Length: 366
Image (cartoon, rainbow, N blue to C red; front, side, top):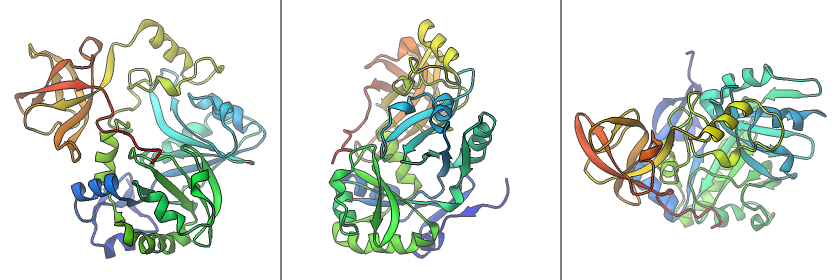
């Protein structure tokens, strides 16, 4: 697999006493003061995340828009300058290459992909390049800090003269922040009001310290990958490698809203169209466990009669609900809200109920 990489903030995490683990080829902080504590702090105050492991590609040239529209499922032509879009790339059979963000700037597009898929995604895109497109992998030239939580805007406003109220959800702005040129965006992976700061790696420690300094009075807390995972799970945000991968298609994963079949040709269109026409056989559902236990990735999901009807893709204890929650694929006939299902927990059948996601209310608008 090769030597594990370090983000520009690695030394900072060590100084803060973080538990460091290998993740997607990087040494990353999984927690600092405890997953539950960090999770609840994001929900009530604010948390700061190092997400510099994410991948960034710059796409430019006269055919850039047409190229991105062909390799992604959403309609990039609908983007205005300063907007961001959640999308996916699919194989010709409809399986998901990756889920990603697309940003539109005056002279270029930026694609933000999952850390574990950087090389795979870049090779996939290179394999479909056409004339008039310049594609660059700038992942090592871009660092990324996220600040999420109800106090995030108030904290960051201390460090820029630009009015952060002027950045709507799924938009970005190139601004001067703490004296440095950065891209400030508002997407997020927690379901809370939040911002991302794309910047040069040489500024990472300085920006982290500046944000932590002004955030102290707001109760800002560093947050690791552990709470990042439980936060996204409470919102039913898909995690590549768990809830979606090359064996799943966007329709069964509940991502039909990012597939625009009327936009013209794109990779995977015929397969996805066929799935939509014929109907899905399975569906990604959210469930709450009514018995004690923690549903884990790969556990079988059973019917009342004990027949296997699917499997768990993600599961944990929800720090907000204080209940075991999870996501999983089940046969369509068992996917209705309120349906009774069972988790095979080391040979024991644990009762669960299908619920309408998200598990907690989204507050992305603050």
